[in-house]
Length: 494
Ligand code: NAP
Image 1: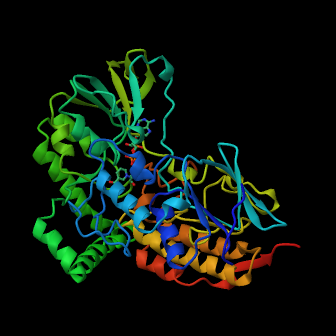
Image 2 (image 1 turned 120 degrees about the horizontal axis):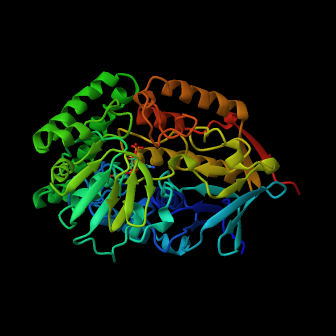
Image 3 (image 1 turned 30 degrees about the horizontal axis):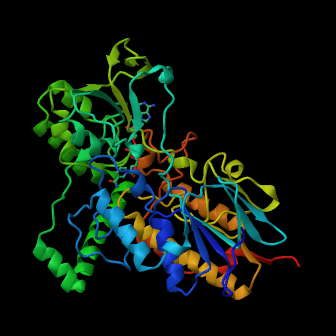
């Protein structure tokens, strides 16, 4: 299969239909570019919001900000929208902007290879098809591959096992003895939802989470009416949230002591709501607040207080036929094991194989850890643009703001290639990338993420490949204009 273009715009393939892929497609459409195809491995849009349907799934960033600035939704039901509503919002964007004809569902990309004489990407999918495009935009997110720790004896377990990102809604948890592994952002949302159903819940906690109260509530009809009828009010509200969140950026990157107020709030929550002093002790983390993502919930502490919830802090040794055996030799018999163990975030584009100029494999290039110029382009991989790439994740504000900065930058690149005519390619200069990445890594030194805990922000070499070490407006400024001097431009031969 080969893609044709009716205009002089380059042919474009976007991988993924989460917030990144859909938003990019909308911006291309707005710029009058129709020569794009979205490849989606699943049968529906939504990315992480399609996959994570576990009970209680909701955003921990306020919905007015966790939505496109160019597509406000005035009737959010709550300050922090639930998963289904976010999914509905994304589907409504697909319909409104006529994206559906551009999307090829059930097309999982396995490989993309840059074909040098033609200056195009040859993209292979799991169903054996190939597709050619001048520009490849990846929008696969950082949280799309569930992490399944490999415990000894896992295959011998006779009960039910599933991951929070692949929740089995057919399976009834009523009256079951359940093991939950993990205490991250997902577990703190689903444990309170299932605790009243299960007979007993054993929470396998490797590290405690810093959990602060969630300032959430339903919007009143009159508030929604105001957002709808006074769009200015909606925008002011969004901006207020933005600046409130943004002001926390400094606490993560420079003035870590400011985070102590959150630590105090988290400890107060545990002391107020958990009766058992032993549980309280286990629930207070022993690492600096902010090192891992700070979580927000009003029902985590009350769930922990339940008598039929047991917090197990002895490490998991192996899985047996009947349950989980911990290092202290105890066997915890359970009917079900739920993995709340997160995602292989630092793997980035893997397991896709991306082969650039001169046959370089991106996974090899990134052996020590992923890196990219502005988190978007990688030297040796021309016309490849990443959304939510290395070092563009945030701990303090909405990722949608970062994505919108990237849409603008990538669109400038596409427009530049368009001006240069068919077969044009651009490759970021290695020294520009090196300087940029060096600067990011030195700015990450001394941040709270560097304070000694393990988290998905850092890879096995201890390199923080996830986070952006500054304000989001600084990132926006740095991506506002494409500087052609940062790139080598070349044309297809023949
Ligand atoms: P996570 O934050 O990576 O948490 C994984 C949990 O599993 C951690 O508690 C970890 O322990 C534990 N774990 C991993 N491997 C283990 C092992 N071998 N043995 C025992 N415990 C193990 O994953 P997540 O909760 O799915 O969240 C991931 C990210 O998704 C979040 O940081 C957030 O960005 C996003 N998310 C967002 C929302 C939202 O509301 N917007 C909701 C859910 C998720 P350690 O801490 O000791 O490593």
